[in-house]
Image (cartoon, rainbow, N blue to C red; front, top):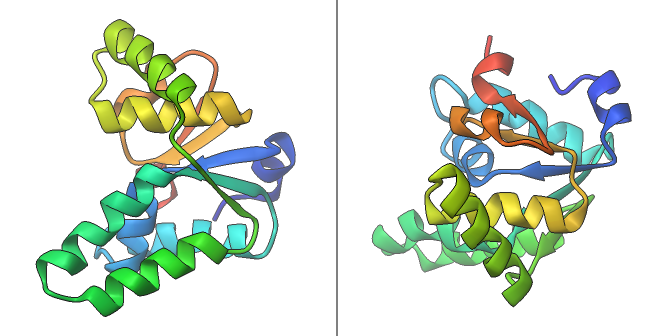
Length: 148
Protein backbone atom coordinates (compact mmCIF):
# COMPACT_ATOMS: atom_id res chain seq x y z
CA UNK A 1 0.00 0.00 0.00
CA UNK A 2 1.17 3.57 -0.56
CA UNK A 3 2.16 4.20 3.01
CA UNK A 4 1.38 7.31 4.97
CA UNK A 5 5.07 8.32 5.23
CA UNK A 6 5.34 8.41 1.42
CA UNK A 7 2.09 10.33 1.15
CA UNK A 8 3.26 12.82 3.79
CA UNK A 9 6.58 13.34 1.99
CA UNK A 10 4.95 13.98 -1.37
CA UNK A 11 2.34 16.68 -1.89
CA UNK A 12 1.77 15.80 -5.54
CA UNK A 13 2.18 12.37 -7.10
CA UNK A 14 2.12 11.43 -10.77
CA UNK A 15 0.03 8.34 -11.42
CA UNK A 16 1.31 6.72 -14.61
CA UNK A 17 -1.13 5.19 -17.09
CA UNK A 18 0.07 1.68 -16.25
CA UNK A 19 -1.36 2.02 -12.73
CA UNK A 20 -4.82 2.79 -14.09
CA UNK A 21 -4.66 0.03 -16.72
CA UNK A 22 -3.49 -2.63 -14.26
CA UNK A 23 -6.29 -1.58 -11.92
CA UNK A 24 -9.07 -1.52 -14.55
CA UNK A 25 -7.97 -4.79 -16.13
CA UNK A 26 -7.43 -6.47 -12.73
CA UNK A 27 -3.95 -7.53 -13.86
CA UNK A 28 -2.95 -10.82 -12.24
CA UNK A 29 0.42 -9.57 -10.99
CA UNK A 30 -0.01 -5.82 -10.48
CA UNK A 31 -3.78 -5.29 -10.25
CA UNK A 32 -3.94 -5.49 -6.48
CA UNK A 33 -1.03 -3.07 -5.94
CA UNK A 34 -2.51 -0.67 -8.50
CA UNK A 35 -5.86 -0.90 -6.74
CA UNK A 36 -4.28 0.05 -3.43
CA UNK A 37 -2.65 3.11 -5.02
CA UNK A 38 -6.00 4.17 -6.52
CA UNK A 39 -7.75 3.62 -3.16
CA UNK A 40 -5.15 5.75 -1.37
CA UNK A 41 -5.61 8.50 -3.96
CA UNK A 42 -9.39 8.34 -3.66
CA UNK A 43 -9.12 8.53 0.14
CA UNK A 44 -7.08 11.72 -0.17
CA UNK A 45 -3.86 10.41 1.31
CA UNK A 46 -2.06 12.32 -1.45
CA UNK A 47 -2.92 14.58 -4.38
CA UNK A 48 -2.52 12.84 -7.71
CA UNK A 49 -1.84 14.17 -11.15
CA UNK A 50 -2.14 12.50 -14.52
CA UNK A 51 -1.43 13.76 -17.99
CA UNK A 52 -4.35 13.96 -20.39
CA UNK A 53 -2.25 11.50 -22.37
CA UNK A 54 -3.43 8.93 -19.82
CA UNK A 55 -6.96 9.37 -21.12
CA UNK A 56 -5.83 8.50 -24.65
CA UNK A 57 -3.87 5.50 -23.43
CA UNK A 58 -6.61 3.96 -21.28
CA UNK A 59 -9.42 4.20 -23.83
CA UNK A 60 -7.60 2.53 -26.71
CA UNK A 61 -8.36 -1.05 -25.66
CA UNK A 62 -12.07 -0.46 -25.01
CA UNK A 63 -12.32 1.23 -28.41
CA UNK A 64 -10.51 -1.69 -30.08
CA UNK A 65 -13.09 -3.98 -28.49
CA UNK A 66 -15.96 -1.81 -29.73
CA UNK A 67 -16.75 -0.73 -26.18
CA UNK A 68 -17.49 2.98 -26.53
CA UNK A 69 -19.45 2.74 -23.26
CA UNK A 70 -16.34 1.62 -21.37
CA UNK A 71 -14.23 4.31 -23.04
CA UNK A 72 -16.82 6.91 -22.00
CA UNK A 73 -16.84 5.54 -18.44
CA UNK A 74 -13.04 5.78 -18.23
CA UNK A 75 -13.14 9.37 -19.49
CA UNK A 76 -15.73 10.32 -16.89
CA UNK A 77 -13.86 8.51 -14.14
CA UNK A 78 -10.56 10.24 -14.87
CA UNK A 79 -12.19 13.62 -15.33
CA UNK A 80 -13.92 13.54 -11.95
CA UNK A 81 -11.75 11.22 -9.86
CA UNK A 82 -11.31 12.55 -6.31
CA UNK A 83 -7.95 14.13 -5.51
CA UNK A 84 -6.74 13.81 -9.11
CA UNK A 85 -5.81 16.67 -11.42
CA UNK A 86 -5.89 15.77 -15.11
CA UNK A 87 -3.23 18.02 -16.65
CA UNK A 88 -3.60 19.25 -20.25
CA UNK A 89 -0.70 18.72 -22.63
CA UNK A 90 0.69 22.20 -23.28
CA UNK A 91 3.40 23.43 -25.60
CA UNK A 92 5.68 23.90 -22.57
CA UNK A 93 5.13 20.28 -21.53
CA UNK A 94 5.89 19.10 -25.07
CA UNK A 95 9.11 21.13 -25.19
CA UNK A 96 10.19 19.78 -21.79
CA UNK A 97 9.27 16.27 -22.95
CA UNK A 98 11.47 16.69 -26.02
CA UNK A 99 14.40 17.57 -23.76
CA UNK A 100 13.74 14.57 -21.51
CA UNK A 101 13.44 12.30 -24.53
CA UNK A 102 16.71 13.61 -25.99
CA UNK A 103 18.67 13.32 -22.73
CA UNK A 104 17.28 10.01 -21.48
CA UNK A 105 16.14 8.23 -24.65
CA UNK A 106 12.64 7.89 -23.24
CA UNK A 107 9.66 6.91 -25.34
CA UNK A 108 7.49 9.92 -26.21
CA UNK A 109 4.59 8.96 -23.89
CA UNK A 110 6.98 8.50 -20.96
CA UNK A 111 8.65 11.84 -21.66
CA UNK A 112 5.25 13.57 -21.74
CA UNK A 113 4.22 11.92 -18.48
CA UNK A 114 7.43 12.99 -16.74
CA UNK A 115 7.34 16.51 -18.18
CA UNK A 116 3.79 16.75 -16.82
CA UNK A 117 5.04 15.67 -13.41
CA UNK A 118 7.79 18.27 -13.39
CA UNK A 119 5.52 21.07 -14.60
CA UNK A 120 2.96 20.22 -11.92
CA UNK A 121 5.39 20.01 -9.03
CA UNK A 122 5.09 16.27 -8.48
CA UNK A 123 7.92 14.79 -6.43
CA UNK A 124 6.93 11.13 -6.80
CA UNK A 125 5.90 9.08 -9.83
CA UNK A 126 4.10 5.78 -9.36
CA UNK A 127 4.69 3.58 -12.39
CA UNK A 128 5.99 0.20 -13.37
CA UNK A 129 8.61 1.58 -15.73
CA UNK A 130 12.07 0.98 -14.29
CA UNK A 131 13.66 3.48 -16.68
CA UNK A 132 11.99 6.28 -14.74
CA UNK A 133 14.10 5.50 -11.67
CA UNK A 134 17.13 7.07 -13.38
CA UNK A 135 15.49 10.45 -13.96
CA UNK A 136 16.81 13.12 -11.59
CA UNK A 137 14.35 15.39 -9.85
CA UNK A 138 11.58 12.91 -9.14
CA UNK A 139 11.38 9.84 -6.92
CA UNK A 140 9.94 6.72 -8.53
CA UNK A 141 7.85 4.05 -6.85
CA UNK A 142 7.42 0.89 -8.90
CA UNK A 143 4.25 -1.18 -8.70
CA UNK A 144 6.47 -4.23 -8.70
CA UNK A 145 7.82 -3.03 -5.33
CA UNK A 146 4.25 -2.80 -3.98
CA UNK A 147 3.03 -6.15 -5.36
CA UNK A 148 2.56 -8.91 -2.84
